[in-house]
Image 1: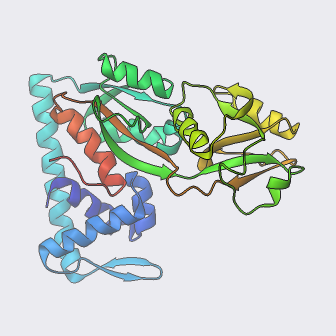
Image 2: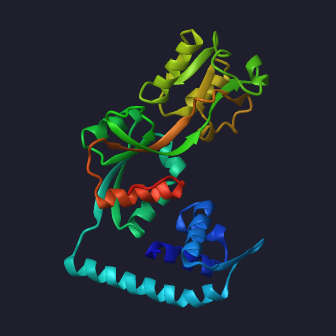
Image 3: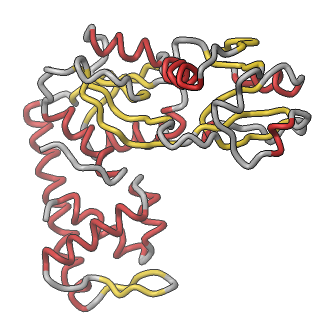
Length: 299
């Protein structure tokens, strides 16, 4: 049991609702439920009764709440006093984000939690996948949220999210009627791809090679996805992209079809230069996200 667990307990007690509490704490409902369950196992008794409307505290929960509230206040007063006494500046981290990752991970979550709960100021910069890797290697960034570089020699990679890929296709193309497609289906099709600053492109090359052909590339795009969608709407080619980042509701002429390749996905996580000492501030920051996505934390 630690002070963070008690903060989570108090929040659930006051809201009597896991969903609302998880939103206010910037974690998933599943993660919050697991934390409360682990706390109950550690104590050896239930703190809440669960029902369809939410949760209500047990007699033990009622007993613990004022004590936990008081303990949290004393702890916060203590830490505030220490920081004021020695005038410690908040630790600073330089964090890079590659395109799409800040949207997936929620910028507010990153900023608010790091500053409010972790006591860390972060300097955020957005770079391409490749530039994120280069900046972490040369020390310009402490870490980066980016696509798996597939490079165990230079990086420690902590996976957070995996997402499937889709093909954005004009409805006039016969492939638009399929439930899913693979790289063999794309042979002979004109393709719209991202440029080589995106790590996925090197992955795609391997799959085109396995399928036995060189892709017919109509255009390579960078960060302006509307250009890619416009080309597809004009039936100039097929665009391959990440499912959760594909937004085509304003285009009546196109659809997205899942790419059915079990070994192919968009994997986002945290990269740190291999051999770098992971100081306490870095560890707290990384562990927050690992815990949020139910991944093993750093010791």
